[in-house]
Length: 192
Image (tube, rainbow, N blue to C red; front, side, top):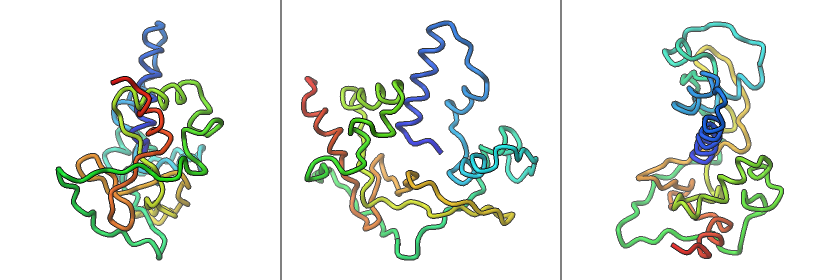
């Protein structure tokens, strides 16, 4: 499932195409409007591009196709137990990651998130727009996805699935996520 960043990048790209008078395929527009299914559905479609077997397991799959199936269940590593999110009160402070950008920070030059012009533009515009970008460190992610019919696919190494409460993602230990250090550096230089 696309994250907020990916969803924003796709929406911006569609808007640019429409402004240029280009037709947007219905499947692309539907993806932008509703997102695809969960990570398992996307991993299955990616790993089996020629498998277009109609299974009819859920309404999302029936109406929109295999990439929209929402029946997949995430499997987490045995050593990753998600603690209950600790409440974030009005006096709480969300902190930025200390020590600068992590080794695979999206804001580093030549990162995968900056590989395409549209995604780099979206990423760099986030601080100025007031949209928060969270650091992935400490967030849980599925190691696999299982479908009720027995199909299994490995998890995507970049598919983080933290619980989100009131727009704040929570790390596996229950603490609120950290603001991305790259995002924070740009946000501090923005004249709001």
